[in-house]
Length: 410
Image (cartoon, rainbow, N blue to C red):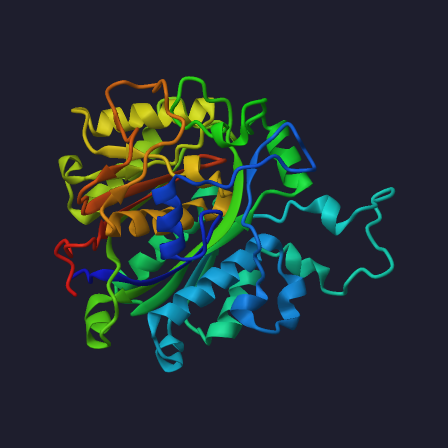
């Protein structure tokens, strides 16, 4: 018999705030943090302001070995553990699943490279740690005392959601009772922005920064880069109830697939992406008509939004669930987007609020129920989708506890 997996804590670092209360307040006021970076006035970014890792770790000599995305991961992971009330002894055998992206701050790390030589006076002996994808996991384990099964996932924009899905399955199938899962990333450095510009994926234009991110709008022309981190403590149901944990939600199903099409462009028909979504529904034993909300990948690029909109119409042919696009609020967090958007979705839905898709004036599909003005109500079951470079597809089905409990044991 498959075991139930509850979400008992979350930690989040985002441009909307670093706690559920801060995020909810920014959504209520309709406030976002979009601006033009000094290094590239063509683009728009959504930075995390005033972040200091030491506020979460205290003095931390290993801080210098973490790239900015890994710092967000560590901070969010520590906050998830802190707010959970779980003891160090209970974490000893827990699992750790981390979604991570590459460090693209090449110019920041090596400001002068001549004839391929990167050695220089003052180059740290362990500079390699800022480029290894598992450095964040290593330090999270050190700081939390986690010693169980672990996995660092690097499936592009699907990384952190896949990490959560893999953790869920380990608990559901009895390999673990507890797991910490999520990820962190930052793509605001000159090197990262250059990489996405070369791939013709970024927004470039003269609109006001707050108008740049336009998921599913006919006038969309690229994504806004963001940064942040999100982590969740997942527990087997009986253990969570026994220790009196706060229940924030329940993960019910997970699906994953590969396009096998191109390195950057999604498959035009979205068949593999659809398989991932249907896999999550099938694993949860849920019919499409039972889904209340779809938290889309919704990047604001021409190709992704067109494919995702067609996918939604096929799975939900009769207008179906309410559809949101949280990147219109925080930008695209690359490897961290799934975890942070899941934290924002849980935060908003627990307050019976559904954030609008910002800047959606002319929807690319008219038969989809895009949320164009903020809604109040109850939406117990949501689907979250991520589709990354290389055709990496991932979907999770999550039951939100909400104000009324929604059938999740308290």
